[in-house]
Image (cartoon, rainbow, N blue to C red; front, top):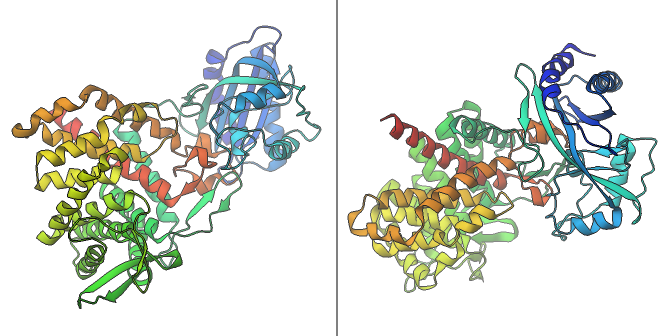
Length: 557
């Protein structure tokens, strides 16, 4: 057994001895799972049962020795989970109960016998897609094939009986996580936070997640400036598609992160990505008016309104941060492209054009495009002061208000109205921003998925509401929203997003932990990691970090 593992086990033992709980008969008195990971391969899980802690510990030490020698494993991370309760079912009953769990949200372990000789912790079940039936099935489902494949690797002598009448035992657990040089970290027990380190969502934690998420995105940009678009972590499979809009919007989030981190490799990756965006993905066209316009061209020769919009966001942010004027002509041309897609009389945008003809393909595709376009124009106005872009946004908002767009609770519209009220502090705009969020607070508080754009929505609204408090002529509008509930929802959602970060105690159960470590995932999409998934977590946390920092300054004063 290598010295690193010995140090981890030595640090674990006294804490574990104090915290491990015993079960009553007929269950084994103690059951302990130990997951060993080198950071590069899926964790090796061993477990033991015993009637006393010392005997249990001796079994664990010997099993760890055998596992590390057999795999030549240099352990980087060690996780220990002990059983706190058990419930016997049949597989028929288990299959029925899984239908009440959203896919990948079953947060328990399973044993196949009453002695827990053959058992799996939750990380094994979800990391090996043992309870995943594909994205067409909303709930958890026993995947017989994946279950048998992993069971055969874990227990070579086992032929599992998954028949309807066969017994199965649902295990609740608690745990600890160890990495070198640090005291063992307690993990949340069974529940929505299950298996994740129990630490506060404070400024230091948020900054660390921003650093790691941005570093992950930087690592996905190749020498040409093109992203590895995403991964299915259970089996380390790449997502083969590509989306130019998400290329641009991800660069915007990376710039928001760089504003905080100032990390050189992140800056270099952004530069490569912007070069690819401006030279390969954006096309220039001369319009019938003689104006020069630019369009982001996506797969299938589509020009999406939102594509031009997020190009504005990324290039404006770059220009502001670097005080570099090189993209100003392109910014005007992209805005000209958005103007081409707006009806001057109604203010409404069309959403998708064919390229290169620029003929209409779809008048409407998704409401996000409206908010993205208006927000992009507002950010360009802030940069250049060109009144034309502001006038386009105001015209668009006439349409948004008339069509009650606030009912969509869209974070992009939240961003835009926050920006618009900086320059046009009018009651109708503030009221739109309030309506965009006020009836959505229960959703923010109760939504089981991490839904990272909810934090973006809340942070945009928070900035607008904060300014509204210092706007005497419109302060009465604050009576239209429950501010205490708003604040509670904001803090809750920021903390809940921590469950979508690939902490090592999560990543260790997937095929290639090093690939996904520090990124962010979408649990109900088989833990998918896609650049735009990471983007939305980063944008929300960047805004939240600035919020926490400003609060700390205010408290100090």
